[in-house]
Image (cartoon, rainbow, N blue to C red; front, top):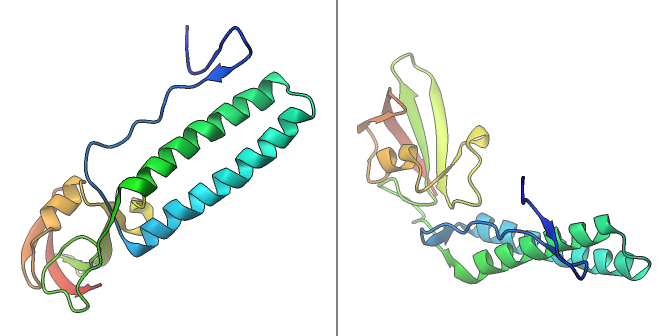
Length: 160
């Protein structure tokens, strides 16, 4: 039987905590802003859920409030542990926060930016600094050749 959430005897819903990464919480300025925005949105949602619960707490209101509280604890912890990293204005080496242009052997170009775990969105070219792709890129310089996900690339321009 799934125990995704459990309703305790007094009507309290208890959810398992969200897993927190074991890695340092490096963030870009944009990543920190996203975390702060999530905290603010969850605080607003918590207030609204508490108001709704005062008006006649249904089981779904209690479950929604429990989910909001759990997510708020997670994002507050991420905010508290955030370590802002600002890339050099003219990077010479691929590092955290740097955008790197990759040129493949077919002439196609791809741009990836190395960001924090919470900011990562591979579909938008934002890769986590702990991902295998980032590990292959970190420390590379313009004109170096690297292999990412089995594909050979030449490093092109870098940008903060």
